[in-house]
Image (cartoon, rainbow, N blue to C red; front, top):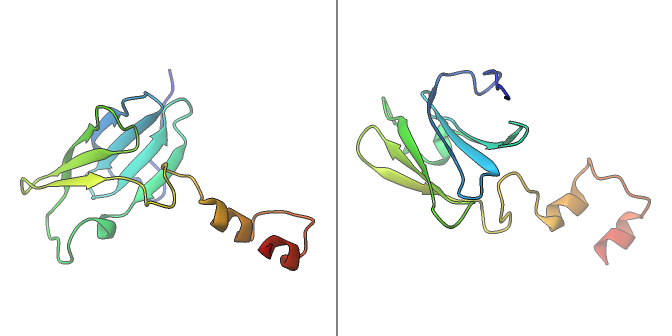
Length: 123
């Protein structure tokens, strides 16, 4: 059995959690509005979605109550809010999967180590 301990930006109580349809991800909503996408095997945080990314400004008291996974697409899920609305979530088009860096950004990332010169990377 694995255990995840609330920490850093995800320290609020969990309001809901569900496995993705492929059982490789866990989608978790927190009472403060944050959403976490975790690797199911290691419980490593792949992605944190801030409330400002999906809630309108002035969202006084608006928070997620429940999360539901798409039955066929493991990278889509819906969040039910306490005002009765539902938000559908999916990674940006360039990412394709939660927590994945698009290849073009990975090449230009300062954390990428390479023996190539900047001129060679542009080719």
